[in-house]
Length: 221
Image (cartoon, rainbow, N blue to C red; front, side):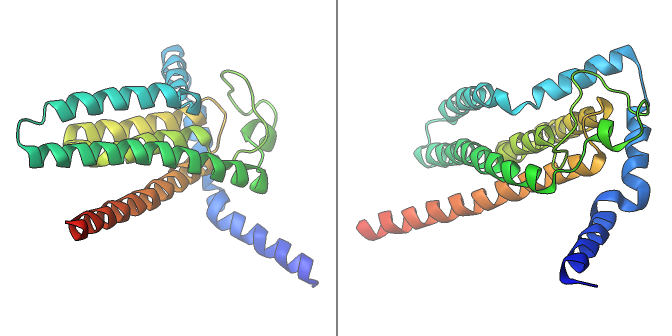
């Protein structure tokens, strides 16, 4: 077996393990995609619209306004005020930078894998498609990635109830992509994971920067 054939065989075996899930990926897709109700289709379309990365300016504006309100309601304590300012500025910064980095990552991963979407990968007529059909660049799901980016970025300033709502929002958007016939479950999972990793790395970098600035400020005094 030549080197090229060996690499191809390895790539196919990795795909079978991490993407096909021994047939589980297609099975789970049909388990979700085959459920059809008019009200459910509308709900899934709404989930997909809310997970559209084109809404980034809208979400950024809402989060900035929310940060302004929360910071100004933090009370007269200067120390507490500074903590709230740093927390919310970190959230806005992470959301913005992670959005840029995640977009760059998706722009590389989607054409690199170039996996077919369900309408192209599965037999004709076996996929329930709602909306405009798509055929290429299935992995990872961009909508799922953006939904995770929103929730993961806001996580540090969320209370328990909002965190539950955030998780439900992420699942809603991810499931909507399967229900509408746009992605396989593995695409959705990959979108969740890629975005979560990006957000965590940006948060680590921001926290390091804040600590470094605090040390520089302390040394300056």
